[in-house]
Length: 391
Ligand code: DGJ
Image 1 (cartoon, rainbow, N blue to C red):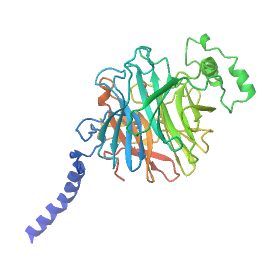
Image 2 (image 1 turned 30 degrees about the horizontal axis):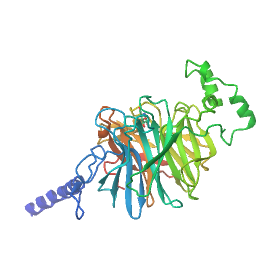
Image 3 (image 1 turned 180 degrees about the vertical axis):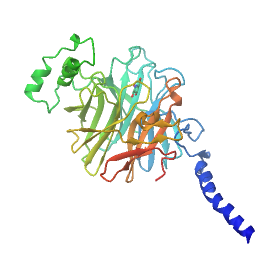
Image 4 (image 1 turned 60 degrees about the vertical axis):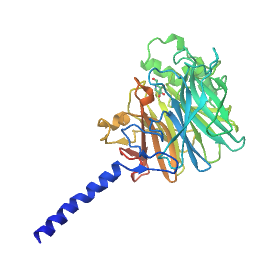
């Protein structure tokens, strides 16, 4: 009897242990592909060749039953783009095949995407009308740091490319946000950015909120850096970007071919310094999660909510809670060490995709995917999970 009880006791301890071991080593194998370990947050994410997935700041689309993951192909050393934009494919979001470079840098000196430029935060959408895959990304011209602040367009007939570069530009040149009144426009025209050497004084902030940088860049077009794309239920696509020296977000409507702007746009959170915008819609509410501006270093996320894509956007506290128990115990107020890049909808779940940047070795930056939970009021909450598929 004593022996039986001891055996039962040992077994009762062993069951959770076995579950834990199974969870740690979930092997996924597919015909014709190598066996890979399931990718866990806090670790390198391997493709089917066993290499860390080099697709950062990007997005994922599903086309004809296959997922395509686009992102920055970063070199091991250095902050410039030496190859271009990567694409990986998967049937299940777990096992990723490297499909190569979807958009390559140009060898031509002086070309907008000459090798050594900076391509960041690519987002690809499939356009049903033109039957093209359209890519927009943040482009900085070679040798000019981050001052060009342009958006670039490319397109392809195939999800894996090759994408053809179309053009790069600043945005909404000569156009005022459609919701600015005549008196607000007149007030913006009284500002003069050249006058302000010292930032962050209350006077400077007041001028910034009036649209000082909007006015400064009115003629040549607005700056466009960190960016995302959002497709609304009616099929309209919006470009959401950090503009005005990263101080203010712009939401701009794209034309039906996704290759230009309709001219309709708004400013969001002037002076709020939001980067890395990620957006999704649930129960008729638009939610936007952004980061602050601290270069490659993590900071506290911000969240906005609106009943309409054009606003009014109300700012809420960060949705992140708790600690990254499997990644340096990074706290929620550092977004677990990460910065968002996209919110992907998988059936009824929304997956927050982010990068844990490794500025010394950008190619090795970790991926962090976390499902978004909702509290009793329907407000997003994001807690740490090692396994992004865990309920
Ligand atoms: C933060 C941005 O979100 C990144 O995409 C990148 O531009 C870095 N800044 C560069 O410091």
